Each structure stands twice: as C-alpha cells, then as structure tokens.
Amino acid sequence: MPSSPAWQEVTGMNAPAPRVGIPLRPDHRAVEREWRRSFNHYATAEVLGELRKTAPDAILRETWSGDRTAELILRSPVEVMKQDPLPGESIVKLMQLAPESPVAKFSALVTKVNTRGTSQFSMVSPANVTAAKFIREGMQIPVVQLSFEGFPVGPVKKLALISALSGELETATNGIANAVIGRTLEIAIGDGAAEIMFSADAQTDEAPAGLLFGVAPVTGSADAAKDLKALRSAIASGGIDTSSLVYIMASDQAGSMETMPWPNFRSPVIEAKTLDAGTVIAIAADAVLMAGEGIPRIDTRKQTTLQMANPASPISAPGSPNVINAPVVSTSQADQIALRCVARLTWAAAPGSVAWIQGATW
Image (cartoon, rainbow, N blue to C red; front, side):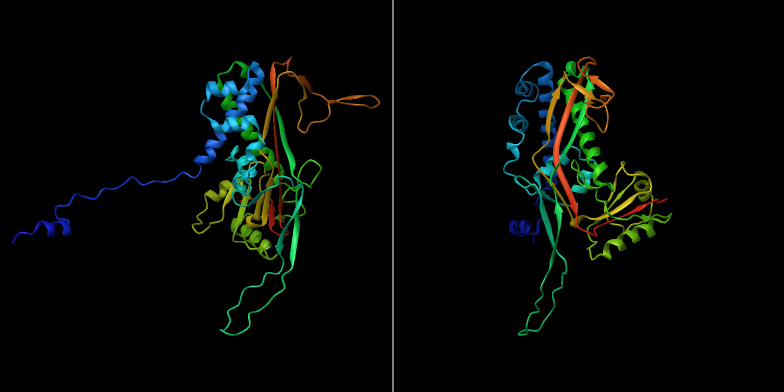
C-alpha cells in the first residue's frame, strides 16, 4: 500500500534537504579597529590642517566623510569620553592605538578604571580571606572578621612624545599621511608605556613606578620549566591566587617558549622587546590595576625649536657659563614637522603579585 502524503510529510521522504545557514562568527575586535581608524583620521586631520592652513573638519569631510566618531573626537577629545560607558574605557581607548604592544595585550587581562576627577586612590583587597564552610541545617554559620589592605594607585601620569616627521608629509596624500601618523602613534604609545611598566624604576614626579620596583629578581637558569615553576611559587607563597598568572618575556625567551612541547601550558605569554634578554616576569593579572583619564591629545607644529634627545632637557639653562643642551633643531629650518602626543595613565600591583627572573638562558 503506497504511503499517504501525510506520512510522507512526517517521515520527510519527499521533503527537501534542510537549509544550512551561514555560521556567524562575531568579530569582537571590529569595534576596536573602527575606533582606532577614527582616531587616526582625527589625528591626521589635525596635523594636515596645521600644515596646510586648512580647517581639520574640512579635511575630514573631504577624505573621510561619514566618520562620525572622528568628528566627535575632533570637536572635543575630552567630552567624547565624559560618560565613560565602560569601566576603564580611557585605558581601553588608549591601548587600541597600539593593539599589538605588550602593554595593550597585558591591559586586556587586568582591572581597569577611569580616574576622572580623582588624582589618587587606594585599591583595597582582603588580607585574610577565609573559605566558606559546609554546615548542617540548623547549625550556626561561621563568622569571620576580614581585614583589608590597600595599595596606592596614582596619581595619573602624563605619557608624552614629540616626534619630528619629514616635511614631505605636507604634500603627501591624506591616505599616506594617515598611515605614517598611525604608525607613529602606535610606536610612541606601545613602546613608551612598556619601557616604564615592565621596569624596576622607582616612581618619579613624571612617571609611575615600574611593576618590578622593590621586587628582588631570581637568578635564571637554562631550564624553562624550573624557572617558571619558581616564579609561580614565589607569587603563591605570598598568598596570591595564581590562576590569572601571565608571563611577560624578553624576545629570546618568548621565542623559546614557542618551540617547547607543553600542550598543557595555558598561562598567557606576552613578548616585550623592551626587556633585556634573559628576563621573564610573572604577574597575577587579577592583582593589577590600570587607571587612565581621557583619550590622547594630538597637536603639531611646523615652526618650533626642539632639543632632539630622549630624555630631553631644557634647551638652555642659566649658569656660569650658561648651558645650551644640544642638539637643537629648528623644524622650520630643517623642513620638519613636530607631532606631539599626550596621554594620561598609571598602574599599580598588589604586594606579592609580581616575580621576575634575570639571566635565563633557555
């Protein structure tokens, strides 16, 4: 007996093959790339506007019409961030300008806050955490008195760089100028922050202390497993949870890690080219806080005088005799352009959350 149409429909004998949709894989970094592109458009419009004696908004409309974010940044770099839609939004925006830098990769793992209206504060964490207990119904719940320890964060410091660019930028196409300025900002912000953050430098009036300040280094060896275990143990011995451990490594050691057959090694490894060879840093990311204020400010000058040095000193100083700090360059005479980038950020780590090794040879 032939099957009825109803039976055929139920069994799918004559039903068409089910349609398979296109799998959607959201790109969570698309928003970051869009903001970075808009900021570089803003910076380029500022620079070219100064060089060509043209209103920056006219350059935006001519070259990148429809970039609403760039227009908002151009009108008021501070006001755009006023609402602070996400915790640590200032840090997020700053790090998007140098997304491949070690500081940007590390900042994605730590706690971030905005410091608008706050110069300095204390980050508080419990000093004697007691685990919860299972108890029988009707029995008394244990009571503990927690004590808290704080570590200071701030004040926010000024991260700044002046870069002398070729005067040919004035006649370059807007697209080429955008690429040059974007790359300049990436290097300035990424390398500038990394040199201080992953150092043992003390805090100064100009810069926050490096995360290694006050932490005695451990002598490295030729055994990577031994060294990494020693770093983890050093942090764990201070009562710090090591589940968020991240390793910051000099280029040689980061390269060696890629060749080692460790399928179960899951801690993030970040290469920092600013570190001396043989340096490996372990940090409990959950115990680190980064704070920032606003977004970077960009401006440029075609006619100014610079001392071409890093670090820089006053061009002249009174004395017997008076001192002129060379080399000094007139950007107008040398047909150069001075691009200045200023950002504000700081960081701090809980005591015991950082350990590091010098002299590793693996």
